Length: 158
Image (cartoon, rainbow, N blue to C red; front, side, top):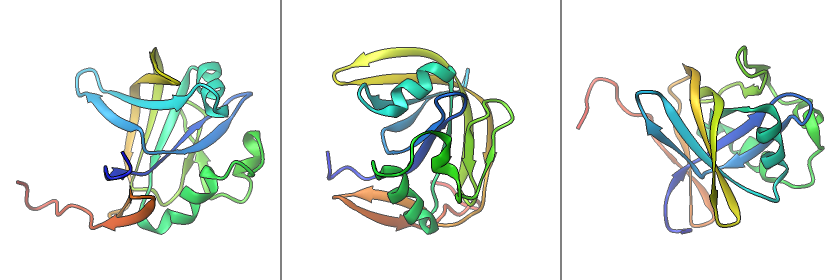
């Protein structure tokens, strides 16, 4: 699967067990209703955070946010909401989850279902709000390395 290129996101949850985690197992599921999914290891701190909060947020990272992707993938960072000290973010109005400034887009989601998927859980979220950020280059991950792709040209489509 390391050969499959994916976008890079940071999942966040607010509340008592607030937490953040770099994730590339994220995808759109449905437009009506607007649903997305993310996969989280059952042993990850993020798993308990999403389950406890009953919601989550997604920051879709831009190329300039490589350091944030690395930071939220580092198991040595502080636990809980202290990990957001010094990180440029704001609280989502619907979920109270941190939204990382400078991202390409943000989603706030209510947890609607959880499915088993081997050693992971598949969290299904209904999108409560979505905000488009800047038109920077997108951050991608493939082959164990970060890559970039230009933002799509809004004037043309395939």
